[in-house]
Length: 579
Image 1 (cartoon, one colour):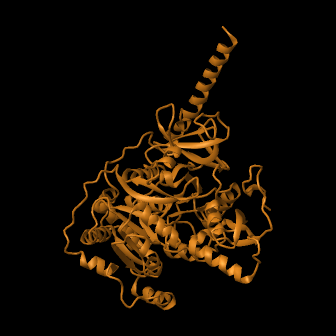
Image 2 (cartoon, one colour):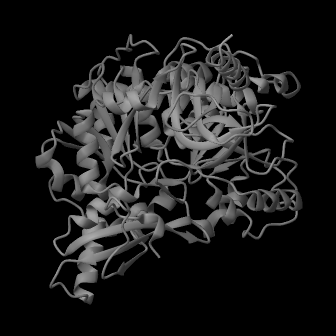
Image 3 (tube, one colour):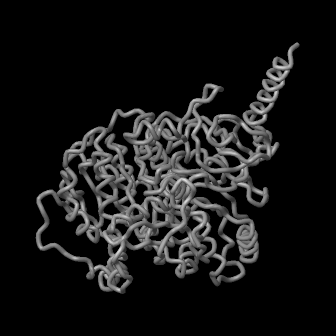
C-alpha cells in the first residue's frame, strides 16, 4: 500500500472518531438519573392553543399579577379573546404583522397571545429602540399595526412619514394597575408624559380599542404550528439588526423543554423581569410558567435597589435573569429565611462566572433556599436556552448539557469539521427550537443555518466552547465581536457607524469596558476631522446624536478623543490594541 493511501485511510479513521465523539450524544446517559425524557412528545398546536389548554385545566389559578392586581387564567383567556376580536375589528388578518413596542405589561402579553389566536405575526421590538431602529424593524417586517406606550407616541409621530402604519394602539404603563397605585404613578411619572389634545385618525387608545371590538365575531386562525408566529430581533454577524423568525412550534417546544428539566408545579410563581421582546423573557419568564399553570409577576422596569422589596412582597418561587440581576441579589438585605420559598434560580443571557456562581449559591443557602443557581445557554436564534446545567452539577464554567431533543457539537471555526473532546471550537446546535431563518435575509440565513455531512441543519452560534467526554459543554468566548451589557448584545461596529455618521467625526473604535454591575459598558474612542476642536458643545452634540440613533443600552458610557487610532497591517481599525 502506498504511503499516500495509508495517510488517506488514517485520516478517514481519525475523521470517523472525531465525528462519533462529537455526535454520539454522551450527555444522554445523564437523562435517566435526572428524570429527563430521552425524547419529548410535543402537541401540534399554536402558542395560544397551548395556553388555552392550561386555562381550561386551571381556570381559577392566577395567571399574572401586576402591582398587586391579579387575573385568573379564565380572566386572562377572556382578555386575549377580546383583544383578538378587537384586532379583527381594525382589519388585522392572517399573517399580518403586528408590532409590539412595549415593556412587560398585561396589555403587551395579552396582545402577544391575541395575535397568535387570529394568525397574525407578533413583531417584538425593544421599547427603548431609537427612531432609526424602530423604523427599520417596522419596514423590515412590513408591519402596519403597532401597540406602544403613550410615552413613546412622540417617537412614532417623528417616523410616521417613513413607515406605513394603518393603526397605532396606545396604552399606558398604569393601564392595568390598581386604582391607588395607578393614581400614584400618574402623580409621580404619568403627568410628565406629553398628552395630545387630539390624536390622528389612525390612533386608538387601548380601552377604546378593546371596547370597539366587543361585538366583532371571533374567527380563530387555521394557521399551522410550523408557520411564522413571532419575529424577535438580535444583531447579526455584521452588527445590523436581524429579524429572527420563529414558529409556534419553536416557542412551544422551547417552553416544554424547560418544563422537562425543571420542576414547575401549577401555582408556582416567577418574577417576570426579563423583557417579552427578548427570547429569554418571552419563552422562559412568561410562556413556560403560564402553560404550566404558573403565575407571572409582571415587572415593567427592573431597578436593582428594589430587588429586595420585590422578593419580600411577592415571594416568587423562580428567580430568572442575567448575571447582573444576581449581582444585585447578593447585595440585598434579607432575613435568614428570606429565600425559603425560592425553588429555582436560573441565569442566562451572559456568562455566569464561577466566582459569582459560588457567591450566589452561598447566599441562597444562607437565606433558607435549598436550590442552587443553574446556568442556561442559548441565543435568540434558538428562542432561549438550548442547554442547562443539571441540578447538583457544579462544574465551573459549564453551561450544562443539551435539553431533550437538542443536540450540540463543536466544530473547527469557519468549517463544519468536528473537533475532539476538550478542544475549543464553535458551538453548533440543532433541534426543534432552532429558528426558521432570518427575515428577508437569505445570505445571513445560509451562513448561520448549515446542512452538514450528517444530513442535519446545524445552527452555527458564533460562540466558542468545548465539550468533555461526558457531554458537558463549556463556554469560552464569542467569535463575533460583541459587548455584553446587562445581558444585552451590543455590537461595536453598529455604534461606530453611528458615531462616524456625525459630521465632526473622522473615525472611531468602540470597545467594552468592565463595569461592576453591568458586566461591560460601551467606551468609544474617536478621532475628529481636521479643523474640529474638542469642546463642551461638541460633547453635547455627540451625546444627542447617540441618543437619537442608538438604544439606551448601547449608549457610550464615555467618549475619549484621540489624535489617531491603531490600525492593522491591512488598514483596518485595530480594536484589540486600542488603549
